[in-house]
Length: 188
Image (cartoon, rainbow, N blue to C red; front, side, top):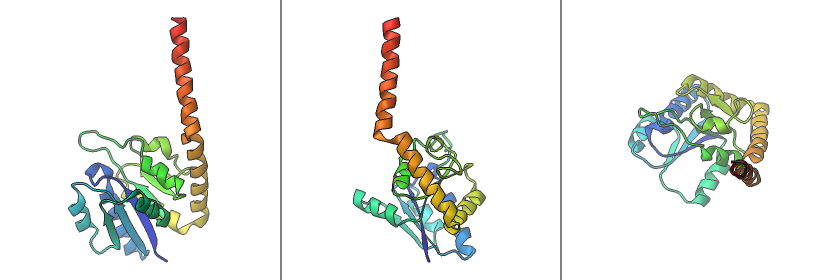
């Protein structure tokens, strides 16, 4: 049965899609039946299409929110292979990781910027060193072939994300900050 690997992000070098394509190529060469879906727009579009030649690959440039939701629902795994670019820019919080977790997808990310705020390695996903194609290949293979591991990652990530990133949690954290500021202002 074919599995779908999904990533969402601008098509720029910092998003690291080329490392994901390389990992998927290796797994296909091993005999895994994979489809890779990349959603985003940007200057790397042609380079990624060339690199992904001969793969079961689809690049969606612009889609609606409803179509994006459908992509999450039909995928089997989500990967955010962002890297630090030549200017030192890193990934922000990585909201696409939270979206993927919301749709109960297991996630893999490179340790980069805000990804470490969301993904706790071997608990709420797999966190790998930047550009680690060997590790990425192994992580995709393990998640797609070890159902117990996959289910555990999905369950713990979903619970963790809802505890740490729910609207109620964020509001309570903001209120605590405001209380601290007011306490300091009253004391000063």
